[in-house]
Length: 350
Ligand code: SF4
Image (cartoon, rainbow, N blue to C red; front, top):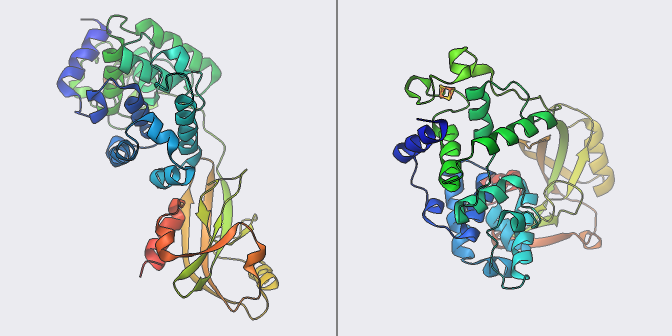
């Protein structure tokens, strides 16, 4: 049995029954693929159902407000992906016929649809012969074929793309793509792959050469940048002061609180100078009480967030356009970064 047949036979016995595998609707498959690039299947499933229920068609999605979309996306992180998804839906809805494309070349013309998503949608919805190359595929190919070129290098991307193309089962591209991805997700896992009962173990370079733990090779990325956020939580009766975040930084258009940011590494506790800065801005009578400290990891940043209750402040918040008072009920319906949503649940929900 060849490589493709072994993978497909394995898949037919071991595959998970997932809702997006029961359809060939390109829109539904696209939804699932974008969500699954962001999180694992178990965590992504509720988001998939939530989006499909709110927006059964791409036209429904396009008609939604950005705020609604971000609210549904909340918790998945990497919000630009949620915004791009919305942009894509609007692009499709505004095109002649307003049908979600199935062809690889048409999919690639959509903003926010990269090579992986286009290949997945085209091969799963229309059985087009284009290979998918995601993290699972990189891992399987690197191990089975003993490729040591880093998967995130330009040379590596080219080598893996060519190999994936050569290996693609041109008679059953959709099935083969599903099979190799599922094989990587369940059998040839990053840690503790199930080599003992693997149908590829006789031909697997990594297994035969005891290099399973070494492959795939990845170039280490630069250390994430640490940022120190000092949030000022101002409450007035049932109302809390929130701020819509602007462009050019993380969490664009999401809501958080008035913020003082300090660039220098001060450890996990605020330095005196930060407190002085706050006092200068809000008056000497301002009373600050530390409520909580949370650390949040993003792809390239580590956020150290200190939440202070701010009372007795001397500033007219009306002057700051991006700030507004909302009731705690309204806050529930605003799109919030995970760290803010966690703080809200701990401190503002009672
Ligand atoms: S033998 Fe192990 S490393 Fe090789 S393909 Fe199978 S599970 Fe992956």
